[in-house]
Each structure stands twice: as C-alpha cells, then as structure tokens.
Amino acid sequence: MSAGAKTIQLTLNVWRQKGPSDKGRLEAYHAANISTDMSFLEMLDVVNEQLTVDGREPIAFDHDCREGICGMCGAVVNGRAHGPERGTTLCQLHMRHFADGDTIFIEPFRARAFKVIRDLAVDRSALDTIIQAGGYVSINTGGAPDANAVAIAADIAELAMDAAACIGCGACVASCPNASAMLFVGAKVSQLALLPQGRPEAARRALSMVLAMDACGFGNCSNERECEAECPKEISITNIARLNREFLKAGIASAVK
Image (tube, one colour):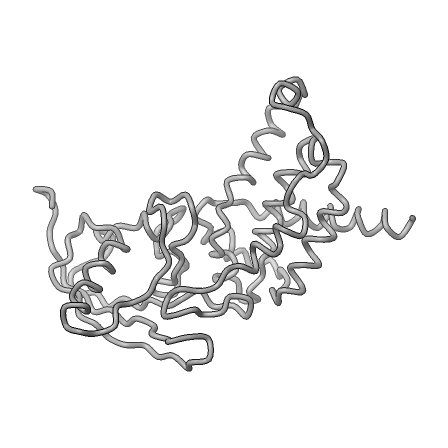
C-alpha cells in the first residue's frame, strides 16, 4: 500500500446464484480494511480470501487481463455497467472512487442472451456467435505490403480504428433497456465496412450478423444511448446508424437480385 493510500470499510450486496436455473439472491458482506489503491477486482479478491478462510463459497466473477483490454470483467456496480467511472472497465475502476462506509450493489450483466453461469459470471458466447456469422474478411486481400499499398483517407482510417476499439465486453447490452447488441454489432460492421478490404462482403456481413443477433435473443435499439454512455471504450452510437444503413443497402440489393 502506498504512503498516500487509506483504508475504507464497505458493505457489499453481491448477487449470488449457483447456476442458470437457480433463482439467485443478494447477499451482504462486510469488506474491511480495503486500500483505496486497490482496483475493484482486487477488492473482490480480498473479500474472497476472507470467505475462503471462513469456509464459505467465494464469489465467482469474470476476469482475465486486468488491463482493460479483454472485456471479461463485466459486472453492474450500483446500477452501472463497469461501475460509475466513464470510459473505464471494471478492472480499471479503483476503490478511491468510493467513500468509507459506502454500500455497493454488485450484480451480473442481465440479458436474455447472457445466461448466468455463477454469481457475477455470465455466458457471453452469444457475442461470439454474432462474430462467427460475419465479423471477418474471408476474401484474399493479399499480405501486409498489399494492404499498405491501398490508399485510405486518414479520417476514414480513424473512424475504422475507433470502431475496432470495441472489446466485446457486453456493457452495451447490460445497460440497454432492450438488452440490445446493436452498438457491438454496429462497431464490428463499421470497422470492416469503412475499409476497402471489407467492402466486397459488406452486404452479406450486415445481413448475417443482424440475423444472428436476432436469433440470439438480443433486443432492438430504441436510441436510449445508455450503450454509448456505459461503453468502456466510448464507442459512438453513430456506428449503429452506419449498421442500419449497411443493413438497408444489403436488403435492397438482395431484393433486386
């Protein structure tokens, strides 16, 4: 613990659920002597260590890189996906943003397409299913030198890179009142549709990914913009508009054929 850090005491109300068929419930835990230098996940680690010492079942939660890159660490903290800080994943959220004596509610991402595996851990493989439906380039685009030879305007390249920043964490789904995955799909469609390498398969991609999204049970976008507000990579809702345009063009093209 650094010299400037202090410790705080917290009351945690954590969602506990043994599996998809279990009803689940909130359970209260006391988190003592939590350093404000800790990340949120490190705080959960400390709580789990004490639960293990007490012979109680530790809290299950998703995590991997703990560097804000992989998107595994999703959970809802006091009603906010990834917690109260904008543009931050849960593993990057630090306990200095909470006050001594705070009560914190921690729940899993909730959506029909996200089944609870255990406690805070959910099955987000539905997002992988959408990617498998068309979130890739399968045509021969040559090697790296060939790609470097294709002239792309700087502003278009920046838009594509902004969309490609999506880490597929599912916060957009968890924050949307309709449990929509439109921001996720919009980002994945945009990053390829904006580049010449992605244009030959643009129509098939848009149709296939939207159909897969619907089949997985995600809702539709109603422009509430919670997805944009809670996205840890601050993906713009303009990508949903681009997805709608790509889907419309693909539908017209297929009807003409």
